[in-house]
Length: 103
Image 1 (cartoon, rainbow, N blue to C red):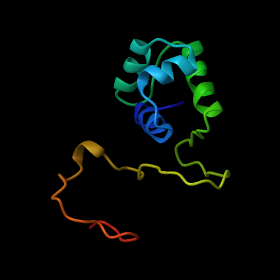
Image 2 (tube, rainbow, N blue to C red):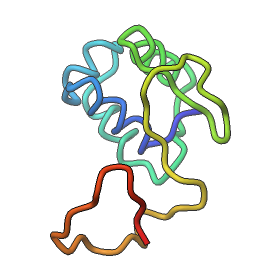
Image 3 (cartoon, rainbow, N blue to C red):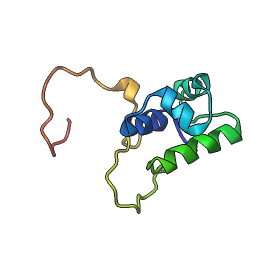
C-alpha cells in the first residue's frame, strides 16, 4: 500500500511534477491529483496503483511499509509513528539545530 503523503514525498524526492509522474506511470494528471489528495492510504483501481508503484520504483524510490526496516541502506525519511502533521505546531521562524530534537 502507498499513502498520499508517501506519494507526495516520493515525487518531491524525484524533483518531478504531477504531469511528469503521470507520463512515467501512464496515468492521467487528474488521477495523480486524486491520489495525492487522498486522506491517507490511496484507494483506487489496482492496475493504476501498480502502474504508479512501478513508475516510482523504476525511478529509484523505495516504498517503506509501516514499521518495516529499510534494508536498502540508502538515505530516507519517514514520519514518526503516531505523529499527526495536522496537529503540528506552527513554525515560529526559529532554527532547528542539526542532530537535535524538537521538544
